[in-house]
Image 1 (cartoon, rainbow, N blue to C red):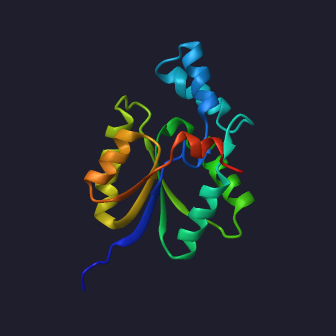
Image 2: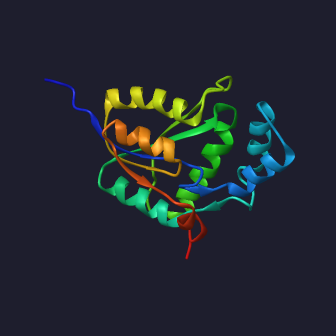
Length: 166
């Protein structure tokens, strides 16, 4: 019998599940580059300046209830995996009635590729084992990449971020 692919939905973190724009603004203001970006980001990823999109958590919860594998695909560095998982687990625990399990795909520590390249490379592997129903993303180039791979794609816009919890 042929192996059946697992049905899945992809979510980005920054700009979709979390609003971390205040950290990115500080990174730009300080002129940080390379590893210094991820060091700074990791130290502030769980701070009060990062807000949770509780509506997106509820959407993730609904896909979970329907039996979809939740895939979180981010260009965040592996160097902050512990911080990232802590925050996601906390947000899922605080905003969902269910234990939401997920697969987390991140940028390798020494990878200087663009977000598009990181996500495209991971997507090639994801599609080997998953039938991806749709993706939620905030970056135009990544939205286009998902769409070009036949994935129904929803762009989360800045206006959605400002009204996360209203």
